[in-house]
Length: 124
Image (cartoon, rainbow, N blue to C red; front, side, top):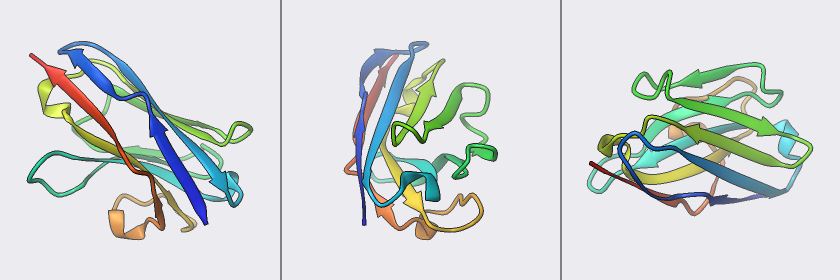
């Protein structure tokens, strides 16, 4: 089992920044590739970004490329998502997730463990 707890969400104005964190406990964090997903009301959960277990491979959704940066600190068992240039379309609940797959995954069904989510609200 891996327990994941997100933090850092909040309300910002368009153009602002937020940094989300995801603290992991339980099984060895460094063995898992990690992902960020988001879900707005009435919409399916969407892929945001993912990072391999070592941090060497990173993928982003096209909608966040150049604005969001995913990173991890395996010594601190923590995953991060730096979000810059936020716009109202980024408003959603953001979830971190852990996958035991060997390669970075972009689909939610490939993830085994999920956090409870943190709300991000961007006003215009």
